Structure formats: structure tokens, C-alpha cells
Length: 240
Image 1 (tube, one colour):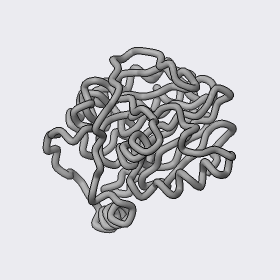
Image 2 (cartoon, helix red, strand yellow):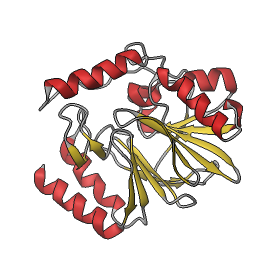
Image 3 (cartoon, rainbow, N blue to C red):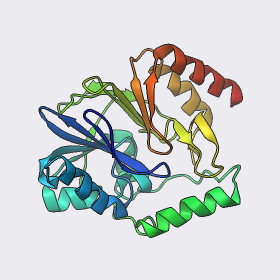
Image 4 (tube, helix red, strand yellow):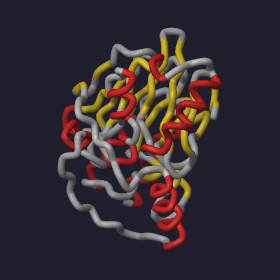
């Protein structure tokens, strides 16, 4: 689905990944679930592109519902996958801490798990090769995104700011729909390793000219300003 010029969503408000289209080429942010492969092909087809036209996969972190079809795209089409060094082990199937579920709504949980189960979420194909980076850095891929480190949800959680399309991709550092409760609004995602650190990290986003705020879960928000984002971050900090 085209959200704006140069910005496309694959998936839905439960789990999504995103395609950035620039004059220099295509960059994929996150890789959703394995079952998002066909929707990816459809989205590429809508702009007259093929998987080989994607220059890079950028992962906001290494959890299974963001790694999805990344290994298939890397293995079959030679697209490199980039991830913060602190999450490289996570994206290749290494251990992650048990965080517990916290508050949950049975309906929301069934909806999320049902969607994941029918879209390949029960059998993750972990990456076998990654290109790691440290933050902050500007990546030399189409769109030249600025990387902002946001440790907390995971050690290597990051955001990608694409000034060329006016979009800030925040992964699970911020979501607009809690997959366990169904609650709408900006907040760190559930299953966060270090909740207090995750909230503190958000202040690194407040000075960015965001435009679109694009999470991995929940609807993308247009016209987010630094002031409104700072207000939301402050509110989130008070609520945690």
C-alpha cells in the first residue's frame, strides 16, 4: 500500500514492513513475517520493480516478526541485510531474554497470534549472514538514512530517518497499536528487554524533523512534528 510518495507499506496494522523508493533505488525497512513475501512481490510489481531491485534490507532490530523473509531475499536475490551489531546475534537465531507478556487482552492476543500463524510466524528462517553497523551512522544505501540508536526494546534497537521521504522508522521502539492489548497510541512495544531504558532512549528522536512516524505495529502517523513527538515521549515516560 502506498502511504506517500516514495513510501510503501507491506502488511497491516498488526505487523508491517516498509519499502522506501528513491531515485537511487529501493531500500526495505524490516522484513515482517515470512508470509509477507507475496505482498512484497505485489507491491514491487505495482511500481514495476523486482526483488533484485532492492539494494538493502535495514532491520530496526532482530526479532522474528521483523526478520521474516529477510534471509530469503538475501539468499535468493543477493540483497544484504543490515543490523546494529548488538542485535546481529538475535537476527541470526541467537538467544534473547524472557520478558514476560504483561497486560494482555485475550481478543487482541488471539488476533495477533492468529495473524502471525497464518503468515509464517511460527517458523522463522533466521538470517545466516548480516552486515552490522554501530549507531549513530548514515548508511550508504538508497535514501541514505540516518541511524539513531534506541537501546531498550533490544540492545541493538534503532530508528532510521529518511529525510528524502520525510519518514522516521521506529520499529518496536514506539508502536501505535499494542499487539497484546489492542490499545491505540504511541508507546514502546510489549516484549521489551529493558522498559526503563527504552523510554529514556526515545528522547533521541525529539529533535528530528519526522513527518511520517512509521512503526512496525500499528498505523503510520503523518505530519508528526518534533514538538508533538516530544510531548508524546514525555507522556510515555510519565506513564512508565
